Image (cartoon, one colour):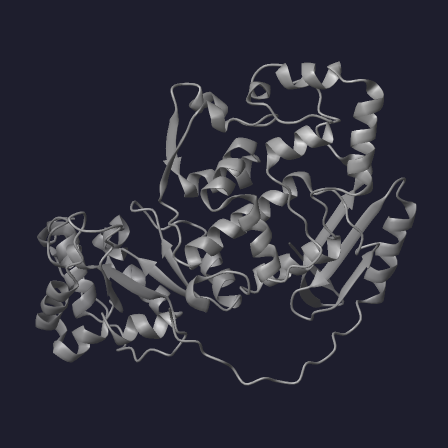
Length: 423
């Protein structure tokens, strides 16, 4: 994603460029080592405008001057125009395909099939090949982690083992292909994971023995050169993980617009911050989320030390539309006196918009306590207002409806307030 400013007007672009001459991760070239549906009224579809001429010219220059096969796609997220060079042809994706695994996982979360904090244990049988930093943790005696951690490692460090384990944990390669088809992503293929793909490119069939040391390279090098070359040439000509640049750019644009993910088709995002301090880039993050059309809900603000010291730190966020979600157990004093007094202060001053259970599972772990928390809130703000915190407000967030909010009141910073509240 990038922002381009030309003639004083900014617009957002999704851009994909795939060059066969620069395949660096293939096996043949690796060096050794039930909710209600809200239907909007249809509107006439206007044809997208043409891409700016200077972009069309530049794309043509790049494509025609490249020494090899290359596909380029550029798409305007806001205006809808697109331009490309051989953008409908299929090119190898290699690690770009990790994006589809992560979207499949997040889609499974949206559908309630899995949770990001679901735990999985990886053993030696889960190892893949090439880049897999997680292998050191696995070989240390097994590694138990969450789906969230696997996704983070796959996307940020391109860890092949993390990606394959995530894929298998959410239904396997067929689940990824089903997601691509269901969301109409177009000319995007997905093979059977890193191990199967890289082995086939090299003319091999995957064996677990390939995952450590030089076993994969030794097996590959033992093949006749003609066999290896034929396997690689076949992959280049018709890649098993092939994708068209214009399909990838279109998918990125839809992801940016929030059309591929988010629970229940809601435009709400639950944001949890560090409990120590407000991050310095919070304003920019909130601006980017809101400009993209998301409604931001801040979880557990009562846990943030800066808020405990000065609840008025939340006022600028509330004024810009950020909603505050307080944990029921905190309001009931089950998470300590400091969190209780902060939660009570926020609630009594109109800075609590939702009461949530934060159960993270079935009782007895973190029982919901919503009824008791509602009753406690009722002693602070009245029964009707307390009920909205557990009924109409959460429903409005989920289904994208407006909330009727009471304007927040600043907390008077009297002498000794922090001392009385234990901060």
